[in-house]
Length: 222
Image (cartoon, rainbow, N blue to C red; front, side, top):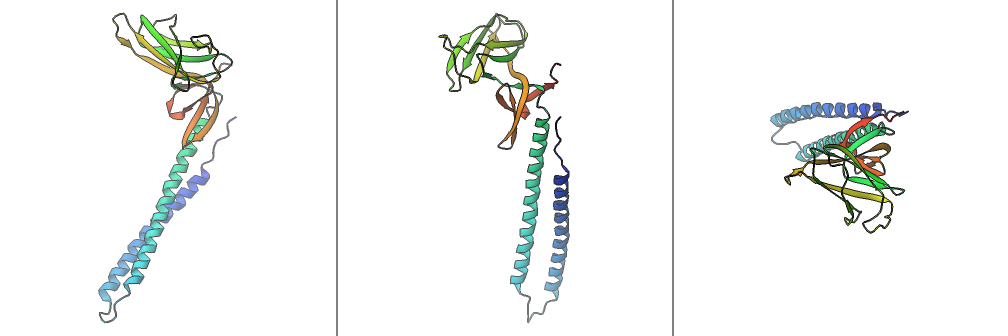
């Protein structure tokens, strides 16, 4: 069971910040009104000390800047909390995400892709983490629709490759040589969630993807 992230604390903090900003605005207007009145009625022979006014204005400006900073920080925290809360709720679900990467483990890596139309030529290439093409091939099914391709983890020379993340490139064309649109995706159970540079990252089949690229979620088959 997923434990929801409580938003009570952040809501209370945001309310306090908003109240502080509102009170500061009222005090600022009052201060300016008093300052104007004092300047109008000051004794020309004994003018008011401008240094005191400057110090008060500077202090008020500093408080305003601090409250604004606190508000921006709270908004940032709330955003991260929302992302991580949504992401944690996906653990154990079957998620589909845009992407061309898959993790090779125990001699197998699987990719999913969708062809927009029938093709007469489909070329597959697999690259390692360095961007080197280590395998080339052609699938047996060239029809329009969803496809799943599983690689046995061996290079063109038949050498078993180490476990890790690999990238599949799919290029398809019809009988006239016109390119057929191919959308690649990653599908599998969400096994972990991690925040990286403020972005919620989900682990699917050993590959980390941002929450923003998730296109569908479904419950696992019982």
